[in-house]
Image (cartoon, rainbow, N blue to C red; front, side):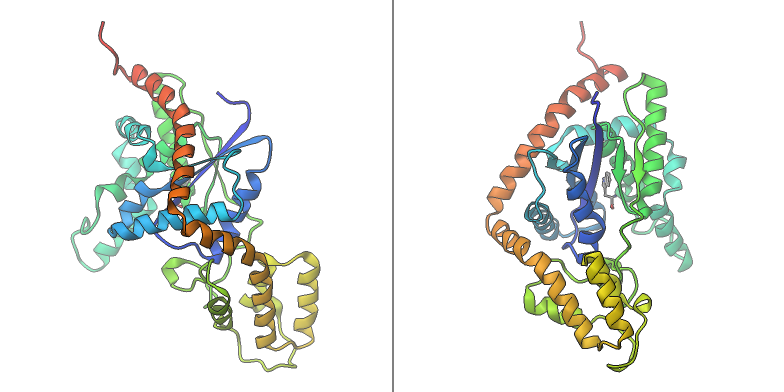
Length: 336
Ligand code: TRP
């Protein structure tokens, strides 16, 4: 086992990255991967995507877009292990071993599953309507992702902390029955990065349809920023930056000096159009270079594929021998 801290996280490949993903997850993860004391594992959770997405084209496109996004933003794939979940056959294999030590009752308590049941009951439907086993056992697959590489730290959104608790519970049961194989992973929710508001002021999220896609080209990006909701105060009226989504988004990109200057501008009554223009310029200056790299990568999918395959090979150098030991431990062995 490794001496370094091992950090691992997965990204479900169902959508197009937006500014909230960038600020809240991608940027801090890439920054963390530069710490020489950590080994980072980042992967595309395409098996997880199948739980909620039935459109093959969309899963494939999202996989390419997310991979190209991380590469365009400077993920160093020689230092971190960057791979696709489905390139690691030991993950579904481990999922089965873990399923056999996981209490069904534990899965009954998973928030996502419970919410789906509650939605059905609320409208008087069969509680299981439209719920597949993938959704039900989602946390076991996620535990396999994490335990396969004995990750210590798992950066996630707050909504995923329950899955980390479950992963620890499952690891413990396995260790108790078969010996000490897994480390106990901890979820890490970053409280420094504020959740980015979307265009309607609520948290930026695909489910609210209020996102600004990360890779809009200049004109549509400017347009999207101009559509962010504000109050109806006129230019010249002093404005409260702490009540403004435009300011909150600005802060996620600004230096402390820029932020302070913007506070002063609000107090001095800067108009909403000007505030948005400045936000556009700030975001655009940060994203224009990576955007060009992103577009190049999207035009060379076979290059992106190659990088993922290489990452998969590096991940398998660990998962293959580990899986052999786990099979041995549970009694799946060569005879004689
Ligand atoms: N369930 C996570 C999400 O929706 C994605 C994910 C899958 C993941 N496997 C993981 C995150 C393993 C961390 C570790 O955000």
